[in-house]
Length: 144
Image (tube, rainbow, N blue to C red; front, side, top):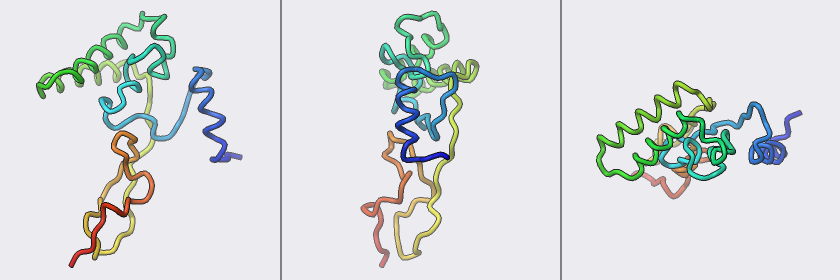
């Protein structure tokens, strides 16, 4: 039996303690790594969660380089530099595959044609305060 109400209480303490070999949580990774860099880079001594002790074990050279590229992308205003750094970070993550993100975007499946500003696609990305739940009524309007 999978009791969704209890699932977070079962899984999250193990995740926070790094007590797992394989961890799964739907739609784990953010759509925009710069929105939640702690999921992709060493932004603190215990992040990302899948490499809990990076402050003690800095021999993970590829992650050190990926962190450099992500933090560099966050501190530049040059779009070409942002692209260069994010492509480099993506390549390092692709080559080393520390996390496989599962899930898919949500789709709005029913709306009246008299409503305006109804999105075609949604996102559950926390950084966008997305539409993982019903579409927020504040964004809709009635067409004349």
